[in-house]
Length: 440
Image 1: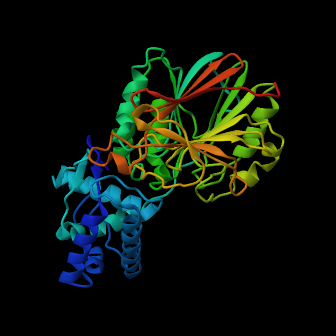
Image 2: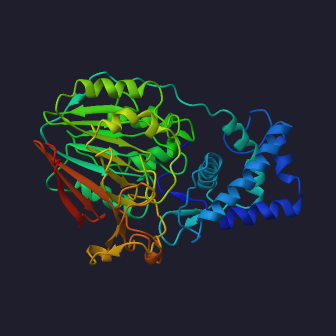
Image 3: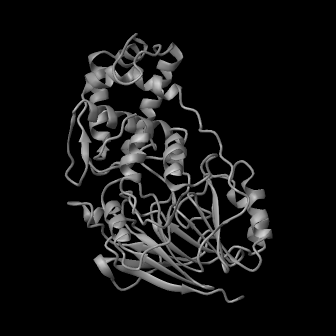
């Protein structure tokens, strides 16, 4: 799929309208279009859909409409449900609409796809052709030993940043222009809609902040894996000179480890647990920080997968100092876990436009920059208490009050010390704290 330079948004409102109109013209029109020889769009020379594939397309299209309806509250603003087919459909329609010149400026930024019912029918077979070919990219094995980084190191962390819109490019520009500089730039995953080559190029790599001598790393995620992770492995890892989708860096005092929790969603695939245990066995008295796309725990969302059980012995041993993850579109600073001793951090608020929460629990701090505040909540369902970032998002024009704040995190490593800063996209500081381990 070719890349575009301006993100294209596919809305539920338009898709539902045009699919409904196609079915009104003829109830079996989508099935017939999928099974018709020829077709429009890329790879149209492939064989038409079988009866089973055509029926499956109808079922998946119905499901996609339901997913999008549940997520979309404001038409023309990006939504991307955690569903493979829905994300693939959005990528497909966005790219074909752009190539056909059927886009128009969206009020809050980007372009909005303007396809019609004839386009939906014309592209049906090509969509089946594309999705039937998707397979996971081959696994790549990480080196056994960590790369070395300086004892004084500034780290910029972005999570769920790959929208190319709203506060995402602002954060990238602020990081790039930071006068103190960074030695490590880290993405916790998610390029929307489904991590195609065009999306990874235009919504991620072309906007990624650049420092000539900095190390760049990216965690794998579910949205990149919706297309098999091919653009992530072929483009992102190549650009970042990153050997695999999991990685390790260390200095005299710290061991920084990135895990792949998406190749098998919510799990650590292909020997990562043994690799991690080996790293820790040779870590000496270094403090350990993990990074991943998926959460270890959540005060808000339910957790899927097996990460907790896979790392049960490691967690119980209290060998982990901190863990930064994304996936959940919020910024949450957790209290130190009372059993595992780990400082959990959700940094999933860097680029996806997420709706403001309506929590009533806890208490609200005084307002800070851009009218943000922190909601202090207590222990819930065996999950530690936390600070949850609240406030408007001025980078979503016309709808700032509906969406939560975007931003990024800076870690400042200086010898054995770790200073943690939560920034808003313009660099304003919403939170700063030096994390100290009482046991050291």
